Amino acid sequence: MLIESVEELLDIASRVPVQRVELDALVGAGIELLVRRDDLVDPELAGNKFYKLFFNVCDAREQGFSLLLSFGGAYSNHLHALAAAGRRYRFKTLGVVRGERPAQLSPTLRDAEAWGMKLVFIGREEYRHKNEQELIAGLRAQYGDFYLIPEGGANLAGARGMQLLGQSLERQLKGDYTAVCIACGTGTSLAGLAAGVELAKPAIGFSVLKGEGSLGDTVAATYRQLQISGGTATSASVTNWRLIAGFHAGGYGKRHPEYLSQFWRDFERVTAIPLDPIYTVKMLWGIVSLAKQGYWPRGSRIVAIHSGGLQGRRGFVCP
Ligand SMILES: *Cc1c(COP(=O)(O)O)cnc(C)c1O
Image (spheres, rainbow, N blue to C red):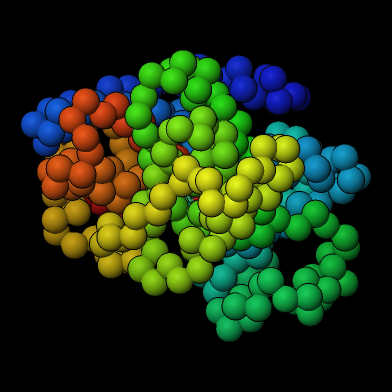
């Protein structure tokens, strides 16, 4: 579906299914867990990338670009969504992929190519310079001018899109929840979500990275920018986002330890909600583990955002 306005996007977002899940550990801790199924918001452009790309596409169109360029790995949810958005909104897309072109493309990249994305492979060493002017200038010289979206859609436009998700959640539940959780890679989504919900509602991010170093700084800076641009900037110390770092289970894209595989199998069997291996499984494992530790006050009503990523399951050896 083509979305033409913020109001239309809010309307769609406010109708995303919210599913209550019952697990023994949650019942025992006296808390209620609602999974907001943003993995179902759109068949091709699923999860948080649906929101993160919205204002990027708007901005690119307003600025008169016909080519969108971004970066990612062979299983990137972001490149997959970008290719889908490009096809739908009539942009050419170019995906700069980390590593050599393999003999056989991943299912992610096969889709992307089928949707018209041009794939350019660069070595891992060169990929590390993806944010540097020289590499970008070289790409411009070769492919013409483009609207640049950072890896993962990690820019202010991306965060603004996620802010709409937060606003839609308020509309949908009319404030009847106590906290909202999301998995964090770059932290852009957490910053946007936190800025979109009421200040009294904590937005809790579960980092999937091992040495997240500057993640908190990124969230803080992005959140602050949203407050300033929205005219709601108050004292710098008033924030409603939190970051929890203990549930990365070895780090980004690492092979799952057995306890996580076990949790994944059990969760899917009991709830019939499919999870992705990189992000959502770790967030839910974190939420449930914290419930067992008594972290959530009894009577809590927690919303977990299902940020999608299911296309990436195809590249993962499921337990
Ligand atoms: C990209 C992605 C995230 C991480 O979003 P950030 O804004 O980078 O923190 C979380 N979940 C899924 C499924 C994703 O694809």
